[in-house]
Amino acid sequence: MTEAESTLEKRLRRLLSAYPHWYRRARGDEMVATIVEASGSDQDRPTRRQRRDLLVGGLRCRLRIRGGRGAVVLAVVAALMFGVVGAWAGAWAGWQTATPLPGEAASRDFVHDVLPDPKVSKTVRVGALFSYDTDYTGGSTDPAWATALFGGDDYVAGGDLVTIDVTQMHNPWNDTMADLTDRLRARGWQVDAHSRYQPPTLTAHRDGLVLEVSSVVDTTNSIHELSITRAQPAAVAPLVILGFLLGALCGWLFAVRMTVLANVRRPGRRLVVRIGSGVAIGLAAFPTVLALMVLGTVVADDGTTSPAAPWTPLYFILMRPLCLFAAVVMLATAATAHFPSRAATASVAVSAPTRAR
Amino acid sequence: MREPTFHILTALADRPRYGYDVIAEVARLSEDRVKLQAGTLYAALDRLSDERLIGVDREEVVGGRLRRYYRLTDAGGAALAAEVERMRHDATEAEKRLRTGGRWAGGEVALS
Image (cartoon, rainbow over all chains, first blue to last red; front, side, top):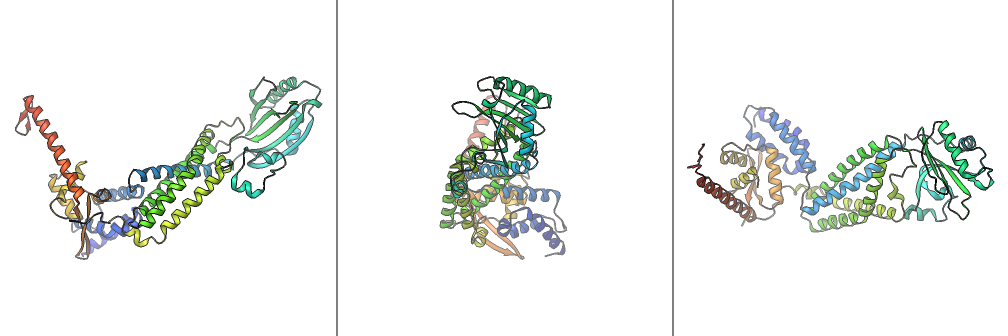
């Protein structure tokens, strides 16, 4: 080995870090030997073409799915599932920039300001970004562990809820709504929807807050609710998209790793990976589709209505156990497939499918 | 089948070869049209191995460096033969039509 070859070899090994560790372990020495032999005797550094070839080759190797069509399907589904989780993380980060709620006292003052003669019967504040609607009505009767495990329905935006007793007011509610619209506009609120159906409802927004006035469905229609919630911050939609893309990339890389392990010639491990991946995908399929639909509405949200929770499927009844169980199965499968893996993965890339006859 | 793949399989058709030997043979077979780089070669070898068209024959250490020899499998031989047959059919068909059109000049295209 000449000094020039030795320097070239060191530089080639640095370039080979573009490839995954397990691939370098299997192929590294062989690739270096091939490149050194193909290079001139006085060459002490890789050519530009060799550098580009190794960098592109390494990236492709990291992203390449090994296996048949089933492996590609696994990778696409994993990318979608991880993309959804990434989008949820992005949405959570975006929601940290939401406008603070005015608070119970401020909301009560606001109602007195915009309604001529309000009869406020109750004010409730739910400070969380999103919560089950039972938090507005004094808490769920279900045990906490049941909700934590199985989820619940009506997972809605947190906010200040002011209940108004219409029967105690002097003006007819229709007139009150007309007055309310005028007063809101005078105070800088943009009134987006004012239904003239009975009973009338109203939606307005200003400075990152959304105001909704609606009737409580009961036999008399005498109770109306005025809710002030945070509008979806502008940062949520781009962070959802960014989070989805990063999550999808992680999902794809995870699938690459799993297909590498699934192709190892150890029947038990291959079976574990295939069954575990299949079960996890089956469990998470419907929540993933539902999550993608919800995320579509989140990206399209223009901040004028009470927002949907981006992570609704994670809290929704029956969807939550599916998500949690899928995550447990996926993690257990990955953990089982990885230990022990050193000897097994080293043989992947160079395994001989059939011997010469 | 893409040209580099065809030449790699062809290079392995007569005997097992190691990495640099495959690169050199492919360049010779293609009259220097196909000059494989190592990253491209090993990506192709991985794919062909996954498709069970080639396999590892043996390993040697020469001058302190690893040489891993690859050989064509039965499936690889069949795939290469099928590709040869397809190319021969296509070439025959093209020649026939060139002759019909009076444009065949013994392997050279007659320019009108």
